[in-house]
Length: 83
Image 1 (cartoon, rainbow, N blue to C red):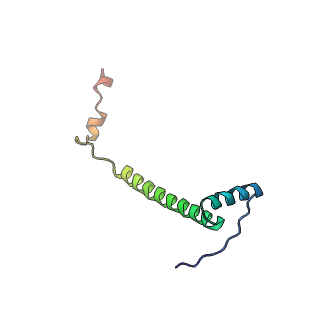
Image 2: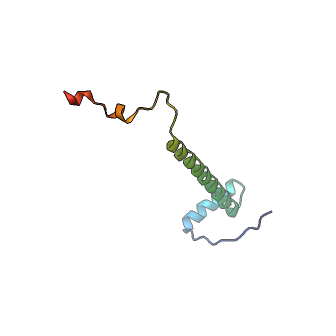
Image 3: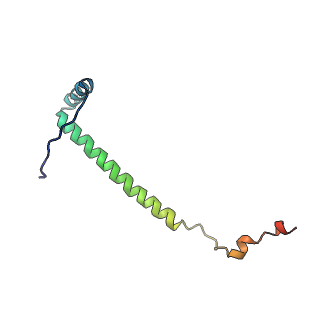
Protein backbone atom coordinates (compact mmCIF):
# COMPACT_ATOMS: atom_id res chain seq x y z
CA UNK A 1 0.00 0.00 0.00
CA UNK A 2 1.27 3.45 -0.84
CA UNK A 3 2.07 6.01 1.81
CA UNK A 4 -0.49 8.78 2.10
CA UNK A 5 0.39 12.39 2.85
CA UNK A 6 -1.69 14.98 4.60
CA UNK A 7 -2.27 18.34 2.94
CA UNK A 8 -3.79 21.59 4.11
CA UNK A 9 -6.49 23.16 1.96
CA UNK A 10 -8.02 26.58 2.57
CA UNK A 11 -11.76 26.43 1.87
CA UNK A 12 -14.49 28.96 2.49
CA UNK A 13 -16.77 27.98 5.39
CA UNK A 14 -19.90 27.72 3.22
CA UNK A 15 -18.18 25.47 0.69
CA UNK A 16 -16.74 23.31 3.47
CA UNK A 17 -20.19 22.83 5.00
CA UNK A 18 -21.70 21.81 1.66
CA UNK A 19 -18.78 19.49 0.84
CA UNK A 20 -19.10 17.76 4.23
CA UNK A 21 -22.81 17.26 3.58
CA UNK A 22 -22.10 15.69 0.18
CA UNK A 23 -19.47 13.41 1.69
CA UNK A 24 -21.87 12.35 4.45
CA UNK A 25 -24.65 11.59 1.96
CA UNK A 26 -22.24 9.41 0.01
CA UNK A 27 -21.01 7.67 3.15
CA UNK A 28 -17.48 9.01 2.80
CA UNK A 29 -15.22 11.29 4.75
CA UNK A 30 -14.41 14.65 3.26
CA UNK A 31 -10.82 13.46 2.89
CA UNK A 32 -11.80 10.40 0.85
CA UNK A 33 -14.23 12.48 -1.24
CA UNK A 34 -11.45 14.91 -2.13
CA UNK A 35 -8.98 12.09 -2.80
CA UNK A 36 -11.48 10.38 -5.13
CA UNK A 37 -12.06 13.61 -7.04
CA UNK A 38 -8.32 14.19 -7.37
CA UNK A 39 -7.87 10.64 -8.71
CA UNK A 40 -10.63 11.30 -11.26
CA UNK A 41 -9.05 14.61 -12.28
CA UNK A 42 -5.59 13.06 -12.72
CA UNK A 43 -7.02 10.10 -14.70
CA UNK A 44 -8.99 12.43 -17.01
CA UNK A 45 -5.90 14.56 -17.60
CA UNK A 46 -3.79 11.49 -18.44
CA UNK A 47 -6.44 10.27 -20.91
CA UNK A 48 -6.68 13.72 -22.48
CA UNK A 49 -2.91 13.93 -22.94
CA UNK A 50 -2.73 10.43 -24.46
CA UNK A 51 -5.53 11.27 -26.91
CA UNK A 52 -3.92 14.62 -27.72
CA UNK A 53 -0.59 12.95 -28.54
CA UNK A 54 -2.41 10.36 -30.68
CA UNK A 55 -4.31 13.06 -32.58
CA UNK A 56 -1.15 15.08 -33.20
CA UNK A 57 0.61 11.95 -34.50
CA UNK A 58 -2.29 11.24 -36.86
CA UNK A 59 -2.24 14.80 -38.15
CA UNK A 60 1.52 14.67 -38.68
CA UNK A 61 1.37 11.49 -40.75
CA UNK A 62 -1.89 12.25 -42.53
CA UNK A 63 -4.66 9.89 -43.48
CA UNK A 64 -4.68 7.68 -46.57
CA UNK A 65 -7.30 9.16 -48.86
CA UNK A 66 -6.40 7.23 -52.00
CA UNK A 67 -5.40 8.69 -55.31
CA UNK A 68 -1.90 9.55 -56.40
CA UNK A 69 0.34 12.39 -55.27
CA UNK A 70 0.59 15.31 -57.68
CA UNK A 71 3.91 16.44 -59.10
CA UNK A 72 4.94 20.04 -58.61
CA UNK A 73 4.28 20.71 -62.29
CA UNK A 74 0.74 19.32 -62.06
CA UNK A 75 -0.01 21.44 -59.03
CA UNK A 76 1.16 24.65 -60.66
CA UNK A 77 -0.17 23.98 -64.17
CA UNK A 78 -2.92 26.57 -64.45
CA UNK A 79 -4.10 26.87 -68.02
CA UNK A 80 -6.79 29.35 -66.96
CA UNK A 81 -4.12 31.92 -66.12
CA UNK A 82 -2.51 31.60 -69.54
CA UNK A 83 -5.56 32.85 -71.47
